[in-house]
Length: 74
Image (cartoon, rainbow, N blue to C red; front, top):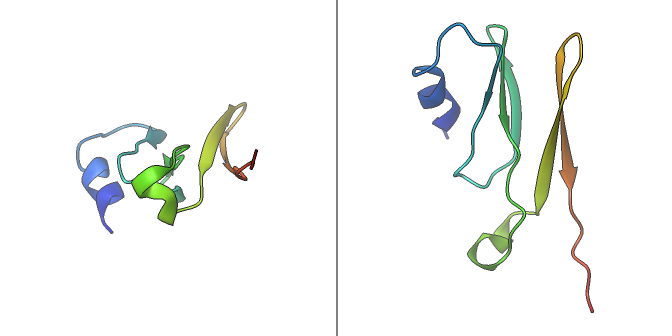
């Protein structure tokens, strides 16, 4: 799955690229750039993948965190 590579070809001179559309969570560092896809907090057709959200900590460095969201039954 090369979405992150396609995104990388568009942006130059950046430290972090946040992208989505695939609904698949991902964190990857390549050549000093953080690629971050927080996934999806939705169900339906995307219920094949676990729900997730993402947080980026912007301190001295950029640190990503993916949080898996558990479904709640009522």
